Amino acid sequence: MVEQPEGSDRSAPESQGAALSGAVPMLKRLAERMCGNPADAMDLVQDTLERAAHGIPPEVRNVRAWLTTILQHLFIDYCRAKNRRPSHEPIDDKHEYVTQLEADGPEPEWTRITVADIRNAADELEPVYREVYILRTFEQRSYDDIARQLGIARVTVGTRLHRARHKLRDVLVARFALEDKP
Image 1: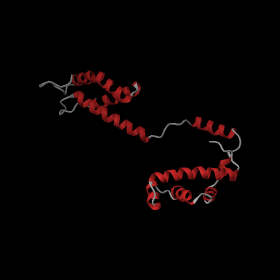
Image 2 (image 1 turned 180 degrees about the vertical axis):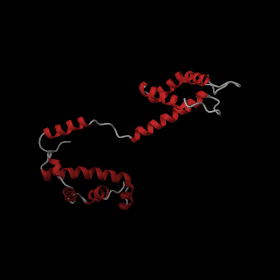
Image 3 (image 1 turned 30 degrees about the vertical axis):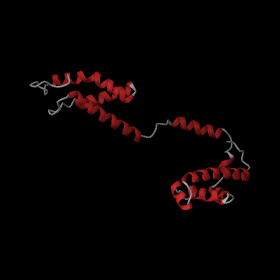
Image 4 (image 1 turned 135 degrees about the vertical axis):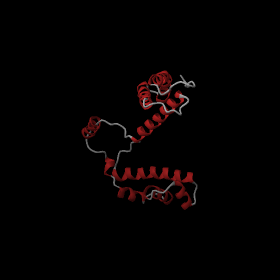
């Protein structure tokens, strides 16, 4: 029952119930396409029908279109709420992970390195690499800002930063006798 014929009494509960129940298969198909999950789709249809159960407004000419609009708005609300919610991480799993880390033995060598050690090691880099590395890492400057300040291409900033990081790793490995694992 897509549209109500002229003269029919849509205020009658039985005609509203028939209009809603007649649209359920269409709502299920649409919800399954939107959600991709039958359980979530059924929840969405249920929520749509709960909203519609308050009564079809008199200005509604096409009940299916009205129900589809409700379903779409509820789906958008569901997606927005899902994006705001933090991901679910059971406490027990996290506890097991921490316990496993503690059981693995001593801390890795690289955990001894401080920011001051990195700054000192950066002093050993060639000036072209050191300047780009310091501007990006310690001053949090964008590639575009660095390129403008140094008068070089943006892609050159990325290349110099990449090379600086590799050279810095070599300096730190030598300085702290770290195992060089890629």
